[in-house]
Length: 178
Image (cartoon, rainbow, N blue to C red):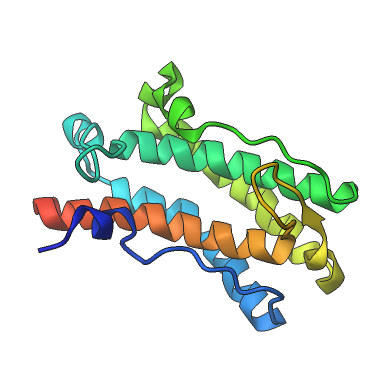
């Protein structure tokens, strides 16, 4: 039987790689590109009641996860653009859990799915146009001791999308919603 901790990290916790090879960058960019389609497939056919089911006890609902991905990835895209245009910008944190409680997190999931389609199209275009040295640019978060390289950010958000899609697909598996 899985523990609640297992349910929180169905693909394992995030780990930084440091500077990436071109091959790994390409792989992670492809992961970011595929996220909208994978997320659509993960929620395909779910009823409103299923969308409003938490992926684990005390966790967000499937609907909140979909909207969270849009919120988080919009922030990530903007942060990357700041890091590309400023010298180690100090980025603004946001309270993800509070955002997930705002009224727009009750909207139909198609709104965020469509947003992610467009956002990821732009994001992937930007990532594929970046030169290797641009991935060494960094941003500072007020809660982090060290700056985060864009290589780290790329790795994080490739993981992040897979992480939340796995929350949904594992819930579907556990509940027999296949």
